Amino acid sequence: MQLIHNGGWAAYFAIRTVEEKHQAQHNLLPYRQVVDEVVFESEAAAIAGARRVAMALLNPATR
Image 1: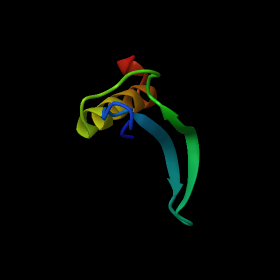
Image 2 (image 1 turned 30 degrees about the vertical axis):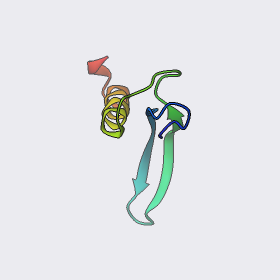
Image 3 (image 1 turned 120 degrees about the vertical axis):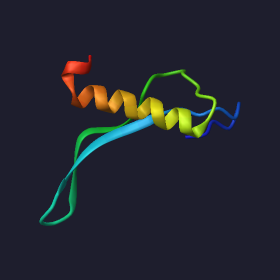
Image 4 (image 1 turned 30 degrees about the horizontal axis):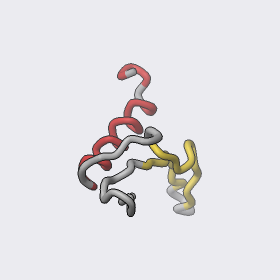
């Protein structure tokens, strides 16, 4: 999400499952900010940061 006051980017993520039969989404972890007060320089950097956190939460061996 781009921040209006400084033009930087905040990273958010959610982890969901998809039930194939009905294509219904179920939240494992709700939509939330990766780290409070962290501002990324670009949208790509924010996405990469959110992806790293989500993957670490899904794979306990990487913690």
